[in-house]
Structure formats: structure tokens, C-alpha cells
Image (tube, rainbow, N blue to C red; front, side):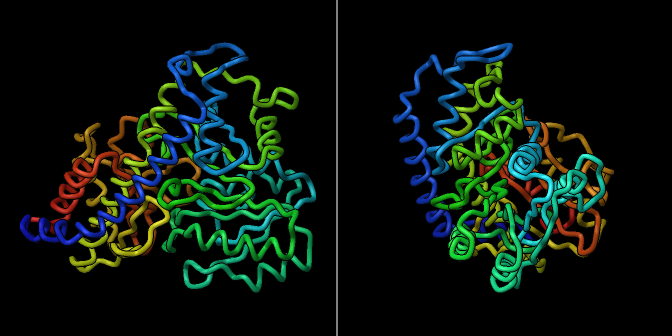
Length: 406
């Protein structure tokens, strides 16, 4: 492929990009309205230390996140190590010994396995007497409604878990409409079961968020816009957020403590920028999808498919080409462009992982990155892109590195 061919592909996407811009404008209105309702001023940027009692900015941030995400309450903290930590906190907060959780979107993401006990760990839910059941998706993006309803009628399920994004699987991300549809069906059978959505990678890729009791995500993905330096959120029903706050801190402490340490401004600014950054990430994924498909690779999703996360999958069927593509993304990144990533035993994963991430925030998935488990069919997962133009440059370097762009 020549540069001229590449430019023609990009030009052909102009009408598709306009649809993304409409989504960005809608979500910008949602975010700015939440800022106005809260009455944010410069005092929200003040810091707290120690116990963090009476932190006006931190408390305001949680109200703003709740409004943007369409929930009653939210727990938004830099004390969360990662999105996985927030998922673990939520699960342990809501499940008790003897309870059963049911995952209905197939096997959860790799880093959740030891939390549940799919992989043995003495600190897992399984080790604490929590039972685990699972139903797989049909045709990669359709819930097994018949089996789910059957299980709900036959036994008491305390919590249902849904993973919105694809993780390291080859399925499609689950749309908000799809998720809300199965939630409605579940509620007809059991109005009390807690429904939790792992919302990582999905925020602001649609006009609304899932209508679940609890949604969980990372701040070094969509909602942090590459500005939030760490942290995660849990949003949902107020009573459940109180349980999660007690689990993160301690029973009786809840949301009252937790020093912001000067990061309130970064969290607010990240959320403010998030709709535009997510839009640029979607455009970048569309460019990657169409280009790679024209070059003969299988991609998931296709460039013109409805998207529900910021991840684009490319199937290489060859380990060497997969690794070289990731190395090309690293070469085209702003940070550590001289580093050559190689597969390694990354904590929490059962396969070696190759990870390209030239990020200002270490491990950020909203910044241009590409990673993959070293296993058949050798699929790369391209993620994010703070600025479309920078992402395009990195993608072009990746294409050159595998010999597909001259």
C-alpha cells in the first residue's frame, strides 16, 4: 500500500467521522451540564491530605460522575489501583459466603479470573465461599437469554456480571441497547438480583451508559482522557455505592475519607476532555479497521459497525507479524519510542503479553496502545488515541514495520 492509497482510505471515512462528531457533541453537552449543575469553581481544585475529611472537590467530582453516567451516586477515587481493583472492590462488597454470581457474557477478562477463583487464589471469591456460574454468548454478541432465564428460575442468583468490552476475546463489544435489553428480561424474572456491568473501555462511546445497578471503570481509560494519573470509579445505586465505599475504606468510614492529594483538577479536566478524546479514539479505530481489512486481514469490528468500546482487533495468524505491529506502534508513540516491546509474563495473565504503550500515564489504554496475548490466532488489540492525528502517525509506523506501507 502506498501513502496515496492510505490517504484515499482516510478520505473515504469522512461521512462516518461526521457521525462520530455528533456523538461527541451530545456527550460534551452531557458533561458540561453536570459541571454547571454542580457549580464547579476553582475551590474544587484544592487538595486534601491525611484522612481527607471535608474534601469539597472530591465530593463534587463524585456527584458530577454520577450525573454524567446517569446513576444515583458514584465512588471516584485515586485510591483505586486500576479498573480491576474497582471490579474486585464491587464484587467483594456485594457478595457474601454462600452467594452465587452469574457471568452472562462469557468468561470475564483475564485479570478478573483470580478475583473470582477461575484461577486458584487463596484470596478469591471462591475461597470465601462465593459460587460462580457462567453462560456464554451466542454468535459473539447475543446473550443466551433462554439459559439465563432458566438459571434464574432454578436457583437464587445474588449478582449478574456483564463485561461490555471484548477484553482479549474475539467477540464484539456489547452495545448499550443489547445490555439494556437483557437487563429488562432479567428484571421480569428477578427484580432483586444485582446487575453489574464492567464498563471499562466503553464510556461515552454511545449516547447513554448501561442501565445496570452498578457500573465500574478505570480512569486511565475513557473518562480520564489521558489526564487523570490513576484511579477508577464505581457508579450506581446509592445503597450499593455505600457498600463499595465501606469495602474500599473500612466499615463505618465509607466515602467520608480518602485524600485527593491534589488530583481533583486532573480528574475534572480529564472528564471535561473525555468526549472529544473518545471520539478521536473511535475515528482512529475506524481507520485501522478499514485499512487492515483492505490489506486482507480479518478485523473485529468492521470499520462501519456500531461501536461500544475503544478497542479494534486485528487477526494476524502469525506471532512474528503481531509482535512487529506492536513494536511499530511503540516506535510511533510520543513516550519511549526507542523501546522495543517483547512478549513477557505480565502479572494477572495466563499467556505472555506483548504491550506497546508510549503513554504519558503508565498503562493508559485511552492513549494510543496495542497489546496482545501470545496465543492463536495472534490477535492484536489496538486501543485508544488521545489525538487522531498522533494515532494515525503511530498506525502508519506499525504498517511500515510489517511491510504493508511503502
